[in-house]
Length: 251
Ligand code: F6R
Image (cartoon, rainbow, N blue to C red; front, side, top):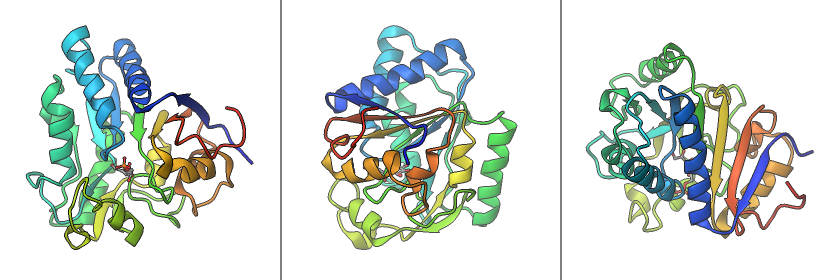
């Protein structure tokens, strides 16, 4: 039974990026010191480019913003060109006025992963919680690296990647060979993500259509981790027509 999730369908990926960046811009203009959550992957790249453009051309400032990233590969340090820290610097942080010390990406080389994850949660709490968290979705319905089966109340932790996620991330976009993809990651939990006051999940392209349909209209179940957002009070999926193709109901 479909839950509360609002779905906004845009004509194409550029429309998704403009819409998502607009949601961030509206938040930052009303709350300049907002706490934002961020995702990596192919999907948000255009949104980050649009935020950089809004900063350059329309004076959108992130100078007072604090950010938290969903996840990081376990075993990669932030200088590795496939690390999510590197991704964020390259796609967003280096192009806007966010202060580097206000950006938090889990340390994939932390001496003690459990302590690293606990410190991440504590830092979110100390910042007053996340106002708006941007999410992507895996073809298997994962959010962050919460693979199918992840509990609704899971917290930030060391997780294993599924073979399908390893394959998806070594299709030439990121890693060239599956053997290069780390087998584990530090990931915000579903419980951690659900505590954000607002959630915006992006999806583009036909490979996401089944996951979007299951998440928005399927049952509330850890089999599709994104479906565990259905009872969130303010969750919007911003998708292109291809990713919306499996939806049965108008939203
Ligand atoms: C990345 C993340 C992942 C991705 C998902 C989709 O921080 O949390 O859940 O959002 O794997 O990745 P793309 O956008 O590359 O299809």
